[in-house]
Length: 242
Image (tube, rainbow, N blue to C red):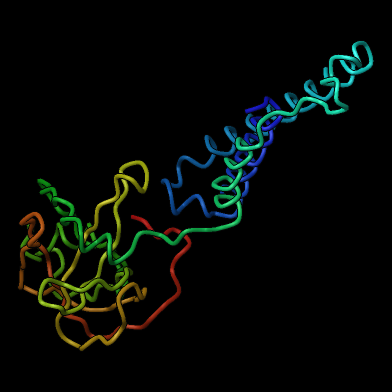
């Protein structure tokens, strides 16, 4: 592949990174804290590509002026670089033009629930009714604290619907360590008010602690349950991962 083709691909790739970073699309790939690093990487790629293109055009122009006979094969045709290298533009254009969806119910169904970590002490929940909790915080309190810090409190949580092993809907969220490649789900079972939202639908539920505890058949992790009092379907949040 010619240096010009490489530079164009690098320019588009850097532009795709910058676009994803400033439009929050990058949140479907990595954690929010990596935004400044991605932005700097995109800017450096674009700058390097522009300098390479400028240098290549300048060198080609000077070479043509000094040695015009070297650009002809004797039959009136100049030498050309293989064009197959430009096919590498297709995946880069795909990254630039297409925004893939965040990991959802399929990924949650294939992977086992995140292993919950027991804390030595669960502090009382702050004031508010309902109190908004992450699925991971709720599940840890429900399983390891036996719901003591949740007693008598209405809890609000946000996640997407994923079918449980019995076909009933569960609330889930993908937890990232660094990027989507290492994402694993945290799942919470749902009882109480029936839900008829389809898989991958994002919902916000309000409910109370349930003593029921299940087991994820994928990895045998404990699964907390919530007794749902009300729910509503919502748009996918800007940050879909936990």
